[in-house]
Image (cartoon, rainbow, N blue to C red; front, side):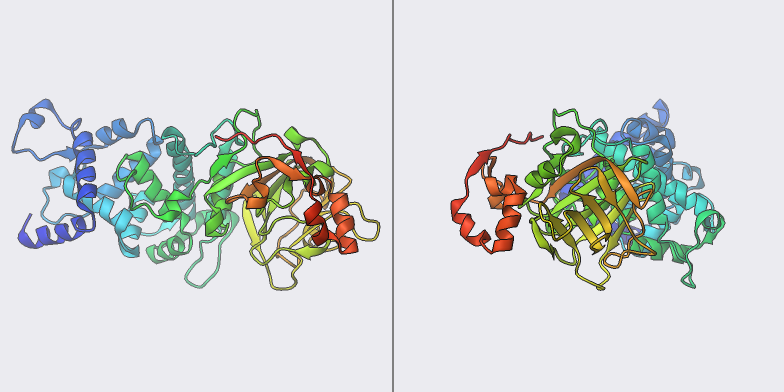
Length: 470
């Protein structure tokens, strides 16, 4: 390598701290140790290189084989001027280091050049079908490597829904952001056959941060490099929230790992580090009073439900639920669908009907609602537990969401509520609850008579079972 090329290489190396450089050197030496013949290994003149076979052997357990091939193609795409053609099928250390530098520390141009080669090993534009396959491989690899490295923080493949469908719906959601230079977004079969050039892919990766984050996770945890050092961004640290309250209870959540990752990324940053199970109809019973007792005054929550037709959807409540005849919450609230499609629907500014929870009154609707208006909610669970509706013709006025359930009026099959972030101090009183929280009808009557503040001094606590921590 000439002086100029050496200086360029040093620019890439200089992005890493000394301990990071050492870590990368060690991983390269480990992988290249199984490359080449015994004669080559014994020759001091032969520089170490990495073959596809060696990379596959190193990543056989943490990564799917197709992702290892994509990583190899990305490394191979690094052009080193003056390198002998015989090294074309082998990765030189400089290529390995520059690949790491570009993917983990590089600018958009540097990342895109690698991503294009990971999508397709041929030159020129790539088809939508190829981007879909790459994106599905990417998501599948994230789930697999985090599971293998035991980095799912209390979630696992046994206590969550099967992730195969989650991979496909998350890939479809990310692909829906692809748009051509003229601003059009191809869909369906047209999307699969459309050619996308590098500038379109660059725009897509810029607007869809999950692609870069997923690649970083796969590189760090798949190759076991820089995975424990302090430069990890918050995006990676909070990619999967810690899971509390599900361990040892035999419950399989309505969420799958891809949907947890996607929904969590839409929460306010300060709430992304932890989810704690508050209510499950399968654990706590099919009762609206039980639902209210477990979710009132517990801080921001995610509610997810499945209807009798298998559709899975829900909403994020930005404030503690309170039983009262007025709307509550703020514009951070959103509705979402998980199956058969994955999407998040945020506020429209049309009205402030974010959250509603009422129980035991004759003059106002009794139930839990989000978005829309009385009798026409974007998401409604009736106090006559088991009944609900999702009305949107054509869209919910508050969240611009479509009908989330299979039928406008649906039958509830299962329901979960998760507190997100840290529980408020009032909710963490060593498992004790006020009788007013346990009996929402009492609280609602006090709200109507204006005595809720006075009653604060008369709170009588009742014991509640402690939640299991992971």
